[in-house]
Amino acid sequence: MVASVSKDMDTQALWKRYEDWLYYHSELGLYLDVSRMRFDDAFVAQLKPKFDQAFRAMTALEQGAIANPDEGRMVGHYWLRDPDIAPAGPKAEIVETLAQIQAFAKQIHAGELVPPEAPKFTDILSVGIGGSALGPQFVAEALAPENSPMPIYFIDNTDPAGIDRILNCLRDRLKSTLVIITSKSGGTPETRNGMLEVKRAYEAQGLNFPKHAVAITMKGSKMDEIGQMEGWIAEFPMFDWVGGRTSEMSAVGLLAACLQGIDIQAMLDGAKEMDAATRIADLKTNPAALLALAWYYAGNGKGEKDMVILPYKDSLLLFSRYLQQLVMESLGKETDLDGNVVNQGIAVYGNKGSTDQHAYVQQLREGVPNFFATFIEVLQDRQGPSMEVEPGATSGDFLSGFLLGTRQALYENQRDSITITIPEVTPRTVGALIALYERAVGLYASLVNINAYHQPGVEAGKKAAASVLALQGKIVATLAQAGEPLSLLAIAEKAGAPEEVETIYKILRHLEANDRGITFTGDRAKPSSLLVTAN
Image (cartoon, rainbow, N blue to C red; front, side, top):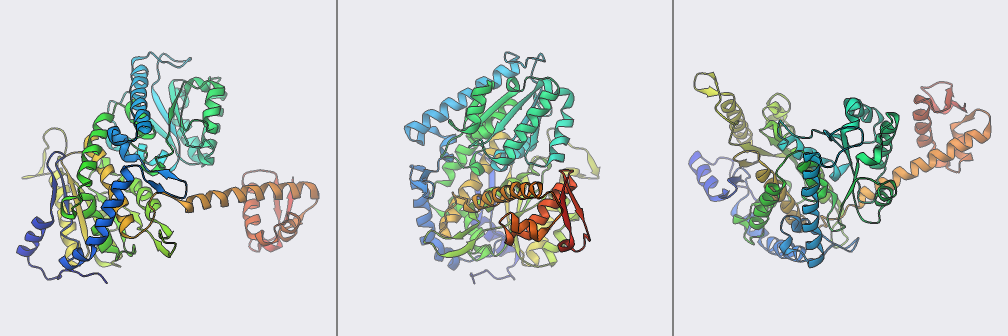
């Protein structure tokens, strides 16, 4: 067990601890408070050698070391906001891509580049998944101006009903909608399916889809080939040295943000400022190191507690969803760098304050102590003055009171918390928050000796899904050839998959529910009794 400070610390001692551990970034106006994490000085001293190594590893990463040995790749998302620290090749790519994004957005906004069926592009439809969607969604929710020149919509799954809902929203404006398709390989099934569904919707209205389509992909990918062949209006690059979950500062995030009227240079500047702060090889003056320290303490270096993200600002609602991928995909690993089975990871969830007061704070305070909280505080309530909702108090005062009260209530019951405070939600502060957590993830990964930059579990899931679809093809062919009702076991044997009876049953049940030429007869409560017919 890790060492902890006394639970009986008095208010004066708590105030001193707050001052001792408070981090403040004067240019960004950002505060980080880890004083309500109950680690002691002995614990910090114990971790110092690990932090020294983590700082060295981070320096090597930024200098171009192969940080993803599984794929032989450098990891260069830090270069995106400071091209001057990048090797010559990536530096040129970054600078050129940023200029390309800004020029393209200017053309779209000025009406110099228009769809064939409308006088101007009015909306954006973004098709992608994972890192190609979560970052852009978070930034859109946080920063898109009320008078955005181009509202954005997302297709981020292969759910037909979800796709229909978005396309129905845009039905009358498809002719003036710019479609951004994002996929590094061009073969990601969810994105490919979304692209095909959108393309069909355009064709159903007699619209020229390629003249609405923009690709964000790697050169030589399947999507690159499609775009070139069909004559899509533009293509922006993805880089093999930027992973999906750290791609918000690449074309993946910047193109959509720029088209919405968000100041992308300010985002990059905020991230660059935070990167500089998190390079400092000193625990107490490095905010990312302080976060990594707190995470390590909370979970005993083994991810034993969940990370609850509680932003007290509506515009930051999606921050927890964004961090779910960043943290869990980076840190959720079966083996460490030495090949030992360690099953590392930190689970992330959260909604927003003060909604959480009425949802799950009851459990946080009095239930299973299997979490640590992170409060995200925004000092500015709104642009302009606020009315008093009761004498001497505004709505924003209530929001601040709920945050401070919840923090105190949790601490009184020995529930640890971190508080991050920013002056307001701006492109600069959002860029800084993204950079802060990217660096914290990298440092924490070094502390627990894992590779934060690969995702073998994701690839395993993709392969498993592909095998299910291949099996579907086999059993449909088997039924068609049989010409008579077959039991599930017979289908499995004829398809050469006798061990996959349950999977076969569920595939066929799905096909039947969607009128795909499959009929069941028998007792549905006893699947083994069913006979299956191909219509």
